[in-house]
Amino acid sequence: MFNQKRIRDYGVKIGRLEPGHNNAITDVEGVTVGHVTLSHNSMQTGVTAILPHQGNTFREKLIASSHVINGFGKTMGTIQISELGTLETPILLTNTLNIGTAADTLIDYMLARNIEIGRTTGTVNPIVGECNDMFLNDVRAKYVKRDHILQALENTSTEFQEGSVGAGTGMLCYSLKGGIGSASRIVEMEHGTYTIGVLVLSNFGILSDLRVNGKAVGEELKEAILESYKEEDKGSVMIIVATDLPVSERQLNRIIKRSVTGLSRTGSIITTGSGEVTIGFSTATKIPHEKPTQLLVIPIIHEEDMDLAFRAVGEATEEAVLNSLVTAEAVIGRDGNTRPAFKDLIEEFNISLLIDKLGV
Image (tube, rainbow, N blue to C red; front, side, top):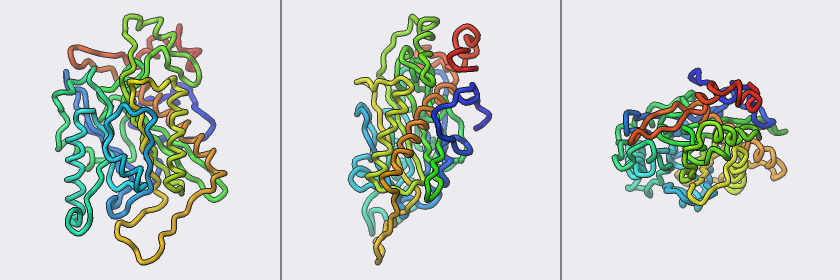
């Protein structure tokens, strides 16, 4: 996407299943992504918006679920998702201290499109996720404003940039520059062909733990060039899972839990200071806000189909994390803080260090 060189372009193929057309979360029909990037000196932050479908998400809700792998995070709206099993707004990702602005703007965005909210029906449940970008960004300045969030929501597309963009502008991953990454997998079953797509906001891990397709690339990079960097995992990762697979909320929850296998294959041990949160939704069934006169009919897969979905979400999560690393650009942020970009290290050390590891 956008002519960015992704992990597959380095000869690295993750897993067994085939990716979708864009190898991104937007391979799930109806899903679009938008960014606003704020990058200048100590301002290294932004916002990313994910629209789950192109209709009115309040009036046509989706089956949804959330899962906390490690709860060092400040997400908004996941309690109601866990209780009701539905998603009724777009999903916003930003930095930790801008979740209030993001939620308030998302509420206004939904109020403008649904005059019944707070009048003839209940309120609305905004979904906002965050990671802490304070190493590169002056997080106290709260640079992300209402207009930035609306711009991200109103300018989404099936193709989008990855790496140091949107909410990922100031994020770190495995002591390198991290950010936004995405991937998808095609799931072929007897009753149909489906897609599972993942988008990550990566801000976790220490370099010596980094593994690429099982290879301990991080250990060698740490020894070669980053000996003076303090390794400390106090970040987070937001994992957004989209699918058109017909599932119940319970089945979706089982699927999104397996995103942790993808994190682990990149080297994460889920440290105490890192928040790992997954939010998932299925576009297969739309749940009307207004109660119909007839029973709802919700198709679901058989439990024997679940293992293929488990594999798909793990593979897509692993590749999304690696894409967030390899597409990121190095930036110089707050107080001159910086972290190198993985792609620059590949280019610099590919002959002596990484050629055997990455297969390039």
